[in-house]
Image 1 (cartoon, protein in one colour):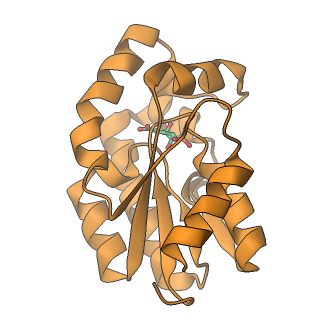
Image 2: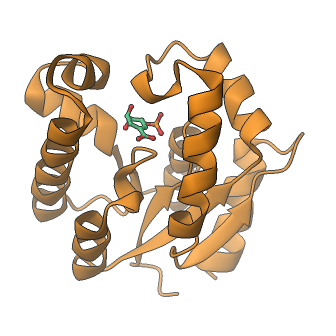
Length: 171
Ligand code: S3P
């Protein structure tokens, strides 16, 4: 892949998309942007508040609008998506149309769940473990559609993983 390529990180909640993105941007000395952060800034509300107040379907519309706005206005080469962004066909089309290569960070549900329970981020879709596990299982086939696939192993830091991505994807 050429050095100027842009990548978007996808994967389940708690897998570590944002921290891998941070390390990638440091290694590559380039700009990164987080879609959830962008959406919260532009909507003036937390994602959890949007989902709780307006429902998931409306949130997905808002997310797609923000993804489009972000892709049209940014020169960031590293983008971390929300855990559900890539599961929506319109979002996959937008990312491809803007030339982003997508990387799926995969881990076990238990690994993600551990991170979710240790994080301060309020995730409405991960308030119940059984429901979150079901969502995790349903989404595997969609995450699989990403261009690249990296496995987040136990004991592997996000720094190590970012290094591995640089070596393989940006080689
Ligand atoms: C979601 C994941 C969250 C956030 C929203 C919905 C999902 O982002 O976009 O709560 O559908 O998996 P993280 O994956 O960064 O937690």
